[in-house]
Image 1 (tube, rainbow, N blue to C red):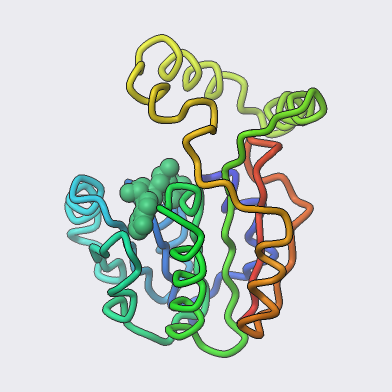
Image 2 (cartoon, rainbow, N blue to C red):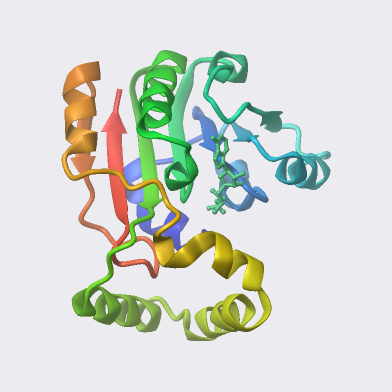
Amino acid sequence: MDTFVRLSSDLMGYCQDDKVLDFGCGVGHFAENVANNVGSVVCADMSDYYVSVCNLKFASKSNVIVRQVKPDMSDISTLGSGFTKIICFSVVHYFADLDHVTAFVRGMQQISVSGSKMIIGDIGHKGRTIQDILKSLAFVLREGMVVDVIGLLCKIWLADARYRKVKQRGHSYLQIPDGFWESLGVELGIKVTTLPTQFTVNANYKNVLMVF
Ligand SMILES: C[S@@+](CC[C@H](N)C(=O)[O-])C[C@H]1O[C@@H](n2cnc3c(N)ncnc32)[C@H](O)[C@@H]1O
């Protein structure tokens, strides 16, 4: 998350006027990184566990609000409105189906101001080519993440059989077809750009910028 925030900060231009939404916030790493540089952050997640972790973590942080949402996008409007920046990082491939992705983007459009930016980042994918593996290695070296990645791989592959079972090397993910984001942009009247920047070690994952 530190690396993502650093590599995306020019593009997003976080400032004190921003009302930011982190959708699918997990343990709140994004808010930990940016809360001091923006007006406010709403951390939203469907998980009881992550919501309770964030509630504890941000209890004394007056500009970070934690909200639980339903997984089917039916209560997006409860998150408030007037968002100027939205992040949804490493989340949409866990949605149940493409209709939820469409409902999510439509919902974000409704609760954000005109001209606001959203990054849907680290969108999971099952295919990984040799070129992707080489790009991943180059990224790890370039960003000085060798120790972190070795630690994470050991944790996942040696100690967390349940995670491996759920992940199935990306085969359990919702697969988002080529051209999906662009078509959705046309349907909803949103400017959609696939970003050339690699934000994480997952070189085969996609990052999309939407301007509402
Ligand atoms: C891999 S974690 C990413 C967490 C965080 N964005 C990060 O990068 O550190 C995926 C998160 O998405 C959340 N999530 C998955 N599907 C969701 C949905 N339909 N609505 C809200 N949150 C969802 C999960 O509960 C989990 O916290």
